[in-house]
Length: 102
Image (cartoon, rainbow, N blue to C red; front, side, top):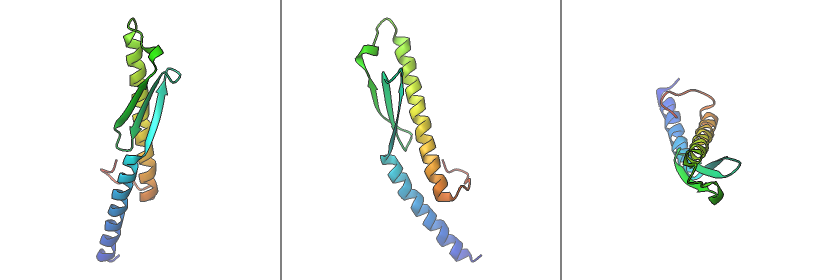
């Protein structure tokens, strides 16, 4: 294989990946816990962008339960965000595992 051709392919893939990362940063996933009492939204950068807590779940006598619900929803949102990014990257790389990429 011609090294120049290979380098052009690598540059093209890098440009496509940069564009995809920008697009994924705008996409969000959401997860809930406690039957929807807590909702967490994450973006494609694995950043939490919103947390919603229904007032009726706020019980000063049971703060631990609320903490557990927030933690569960946050972890699920981050997992979904990671899976979304991995799925999109897999489409771009044709399923190839490239070390250091997500």
